[in-house]
Length: 177
Length: 313
Image (spheres, each protein chain N blue to C red):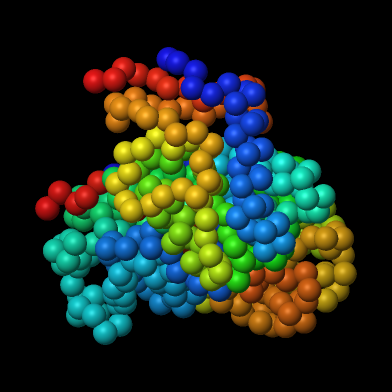
């Protein structure tokens, strides 16, 4: 196991992404941040408070559960659903920023786009991830990346966040085959 | 293969998982697009050998909102009315490749027979068998109680529920007693002695014959329908007397605890077990029970069908 990002790295990455989001969207007025549970949602809330600290005004933030839209439901045991929480202004006509912890095959994001379509029609959708580890199986690309981590498909990337795991850390586990 | 034949097929955690999943399904049902791709390509057969309105359309709406294909099979207008046996009907469904069979049948144990006889390879969901059980109704009742009295989460500890009426013939009562106790609630049965089952005291519930004394002590009242179709003998002297002693009316409603709710699984005999002014009062959650029913059945179909093994045909 090796540590790819420590607590300070994660903090800096989130602050930088917050600035990038504000730069790209000329402020926070039009944006709605939606994290994919569980850790994507944790990062979404951190991003929102980081943006609020910079701009000094509240940000629309929530969570979007994608379980019922997964394309592997047939193969796996059913999972418990997580909470979907859409902020008051909704998604209609807004710039939605999807947030996840790790971008891997891209299938989660495809499911998230489907789930989003059920709630409304955003003006545009952008994607922010803490870690991009490659190995995409779908034509999906992140707009904001905390860290690109080249990995082997046999390895696994684990994100630990203090809210849930007591520590802020991203680790790579397993051997390169 | 997991089936849902009885509330006893679920432990407390699994029952709570169904309720929690249903909470998310309620959100879907309140959204602008009431459709999920979850069960696309799956086939759900509604095999209804007994009349039913809300349970059948509720399971149908639930399956359709999850994108499953639905085949409705009712006794009237099918070979069941020509005398075809349950086994032959089941084998026909099997040949059509049903991933789940939702069965309502007048014979107690029909769902068990279908599942244990291995006549179908899909999941069997009991939607009411004779006077035995009706698990999805109990789940939606507990869900409704939890929404109103426990803020929509956790179990039902500390809640006291009265079940009033024809306990003897009621599958709704049996499933509700099992589930409410499992979730930590206290149950009081209120009925004339003729409508209580033999050895009911062994069920771990309180029993009373005095409705007006019980009402101020409970958080929720579940009124049961007087099932004229199951009553071959005389169980009470007259409908009027039953209504006076065991029906809920405006005077009894005035005795209820503040914030308590009145429930009825439907269809209601207005004027017999419940008066119209009570059925339409703000404390009545009958209509909400119906909409919660769709969410509960979506949760059941999702948790039992998604991820189940492909049929081995």
